[in-house]
Amino acid sequence: MIVKRRLTAGLSTFLLSIGAGAFVASTPAQADLVYCYDNPQFCLYDRDGFYSEGYPGNTPRNTCIPLKSFDDNVVYNLTSTRWYVFHTTTCDGAHEEVPPGYVGLIPGGYHYGQTHAIMRTSRTS
Image (tube, rainbow, N blue to C red):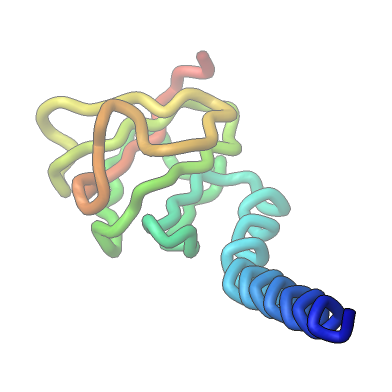
């Protein structure tokens, strides 16, 4: 009976420490996500879920924006227009489209480190 209580107490402590560690690890990304929602914009996150950079919904249309870092993996398009993502920093060549309201992995198989520039379009759908 005593062994069972000690085992239960040890397991409970272990699970609580894992939960606390997960909360601490996710707090910065959650804070960044709140910022992205409070200021509707096009937000990019790295593969670890940390905010990389963001651009407001009123960013000039059809203007190429070279990214500050190339470690993006996830996109939150909280604007009302489509955005393009490019492999180049000059917005030439093939691109993928990110529709309004899209949240998830960067479309089109653009993997970690492959998105180098973005452009806001005039298209709303």
